[in-house]
Length: 113
Image 1 (tube, helix red, strand yellow):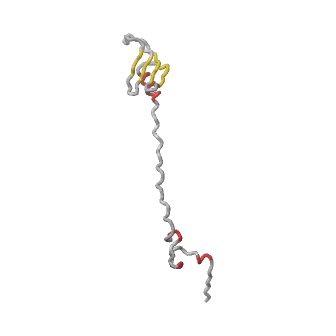
Image 2 (cartoon, helix red, strand yellow):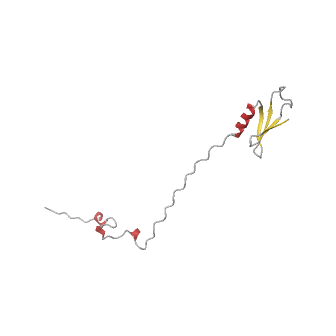
Image 3 (cartoon, one colour):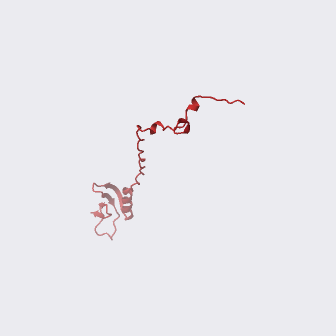
């Protein structure tokens, strides 16, 4: 029976802290080594903002549901909408047909004759 013994590069590379290397600590754990850098938590993933409602079409639909025909609809600096409208004249409207309608952000509608 023959015992084969070999010594090579593979046998000299042992896991740090194992019995075969005398219990040495790995280099990263030596007394002079710096501690590992702190691990920063991952940045939170921001969800995209919800889509904003299309206030142009909402206000246009609101006017058309009241019998107006909207010719032009413009948003003002204060958030209100000014519309140039027409409406069929009927006897139940003694003031006449409004030329302009303003829709305020709170939903109030003001007619201008």
